[in-house]
Image (cartoon, rainbow, N blue to C red; front, side, top):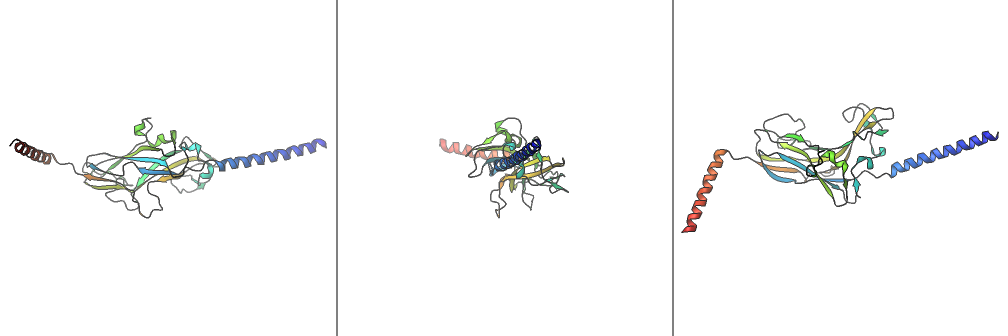
Length: 261
């Protein structure tokens, strides 16, 4: 009889310990640092180029006002409670949306998208269709990974920590002009930094989702006044260059003669 009572007491103690452990685990998960808030800016929003120039798009990542220093390693701040349901397909939303039970950290990574809003035009650097053309820019995606601080890429971010007042500049895209690239004013509307999160559901299915962390143009803004723009001018033809050079020589010769007289 005594052994039975002792066993019951042990079971009650064990259940209390398990309940307390689960509660502490839940608190720890909730107390984990909230998702960091980033500010994303174009390093050089406006500039000029010629129809033969490849145009690099550099982005500047910094902390939003009031944000404490943050490690950019997703393992340090991303919790299951931060994640929406994940898709079982390659598109979001997919045919089935499931809650995350675990995260595959080896596959989870940062990404940066870009676009020109809902009304892409011929003067948008990037076309979602990306149909090859001799008169449009093609996009080169820079990933990094070379440990070159001057050429940081999106894959290098997780190795860094951002302090208050600090920033990281990274190259994300380069736009290569077509053979018949016309002159004009070209633009990008916005860019966004986000996490592509991969993991498994409670039933072991592979799922993924996207978590937005910052943008160059907040959705709350009725119009985006932080576009990336380049005024692209035509390169003079060789005959035009020859005429310009001859004219410049005549001007210089006249100036020398006047100086001697």
